[in-house]
Image 1 (cartoon, rainbow, N blue to C red):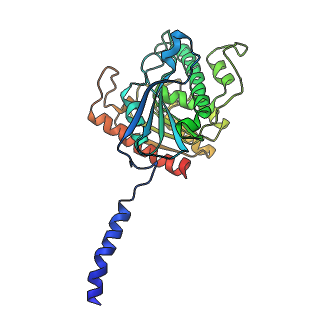
Image 2: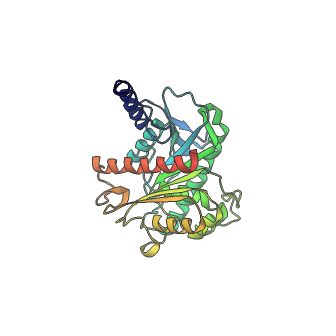
Image 3: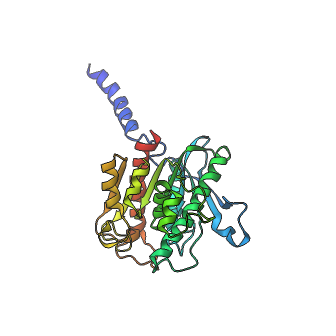
Amino acid sequence: MLKKLFIYLPVFCLAIAAQAQTKHRYKDIIYQGVAVEKDQTYNPNALKEDKKAYLFDLYRPTGDDEKHRPLIIWMHGGGFKFGSKSAKGVQLWSKTFAQRGYVCANINYRLSKKNPLFHFDELLKGTYYAVQDVKLAIEYFKKNAIRYGIDPNKIILGGNSAGGIIALQAAYSSNEELAKMANISADSAEVNFPEERVKVAAVINFWGAIYNLDWLKNAEVPIVTCLGSNDGLVSPTHKSAPMYGGEDIHDKATALGIPNELKVFEGYSHELQKHFDPLFENGKGTEDRWLEAGQFTADFLYKYVIN
């Protein structure tokens, strides 16, 4: 009996160790290599002066032959005035989610030519036009699903700051609702398909906000939110801001039965910096928090979108 125990014990230990090391596609990083196709366009018919606004970088795991992978469309921050697909955060998330098996499109969108950072009405207009661009990107990727090996029914919108704002408005507001709030005439040629609301699989909201909390009644799109408790730029609540932040969204979505989860980084500000400074180069501590937010998001998507 003792002899048999010594024979089977190592096998049993190896089985337990193998089980503990099992990694799950879309939840854990399983690919090391990522192929990046830079400066592609999702609007081949764009005017010459707008071509840069419609560029995207595509991230795909190398050595992966899956044909129906979820797609995450990532949108950078910058207050609708600054930023691009080369921003550190969206590059980091595009790479690490591709390493989990996703396809990621890190996109540019039209930026405001005015001053949305100090004029809320211009911020609203900037949001409206950015949302139209994202809808164009969604249409492009659905038409090219076979080419990129993606599942057109599992397109996820994600972004930080302004990117999170765009993702939320695109998923939950109609063109007419957003145009009305931005004081754009519903009769304007710019308001195409007034009632249109895109169908996406989920929203990744990194320290973004929604303009009207009641818009959450329009759909049941799962929302995962990460934010800093001391964010003074996009407040976690409506108390000190004209928008509804991540904590408001979490409470309302929960009340409505919308799958959602919230992760609060206590003591941190916008972009998960200790003290937000848009000119400060994010250090390792901030990037570690971005990676933590990414893993929290991957766990959420695995639970509510993948399975």
